[in-house]
Length: 382
Image 1: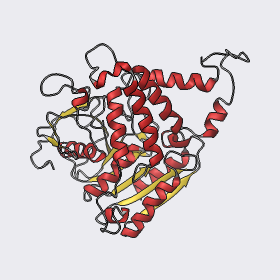
Image 2: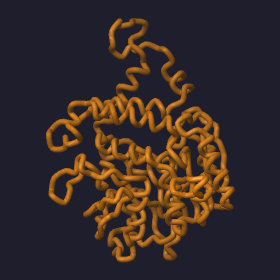
Image 3: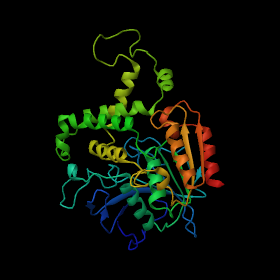
Image 4: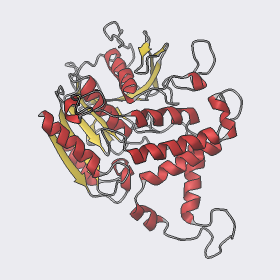
């Protein structure tokens, strides 16, 4: 795969908001294709110390981005982990140099299907299918350019946790600590099914135009909204939905006896879907969710009679691990984290594992769960 030895250091301030880096070499992909002229969008917080050993890589979730602790440029909302990253916070930028890159295939500045190909036209459906490891491969090239050859830690939740695990296995000397939140070592079959539902909703929208809608003035917003609605349900818990909405009607006690949004939960989901189309690209959603569906860290490991043993994948790791799950997360339930913990134990890797109680479902790692703050701070400082 791509050699990182020739990368030139980035000559930009270490505290970078809205920064980009253009790879000066092709990026080889797991699917056998090569991307040229890859751009990586990223943000950094804090200062890289003289020893260059205080860097933390934070990997974002499916539809996240590099705006970790700064306002989102489209929505104006605070950074997705502003409560966790900053001076004096659990990921303390007075102590650590925090790097958050946008993933390959996204639509927030890093090269993806909406980017221009070398021929000057949008990639669209010509963009190659990518993997989680391809995303991490781009991260590693960025780290090299930033002068970071050793990470204090890599942290990720959900798809970000997949990236953190991939880095620990495929670049075992890079990170000393690996913190994985609400994630999995292989995409569960039920989740693959939900993701396929979302992809089919997008591709069934006539405005998708076979994926070549960029530059036509039209986009498959209706299909993307449905995909987001389906996914958003999986991020929440039954308790959250019941408490926030129950069976309450949108307009008092009046039923419409039609197919409008009678229930408050219906109105909420429609809002989530419609607002999502204003900040995310449908093709990016297809490519990123496909990468997640492909994710299986054990693939290619193990003996012939036991193919894909996860413990074999972890045999060469050199990191300390912390795994966190949430008791109301049914997208990546505690059993997924427990499987990782057992495999790490079998491989002889140091690992701590805990299930936290929170009412928010899968999204708990993004929300106000004080116990998570304590876990993260403790793992980083001990």
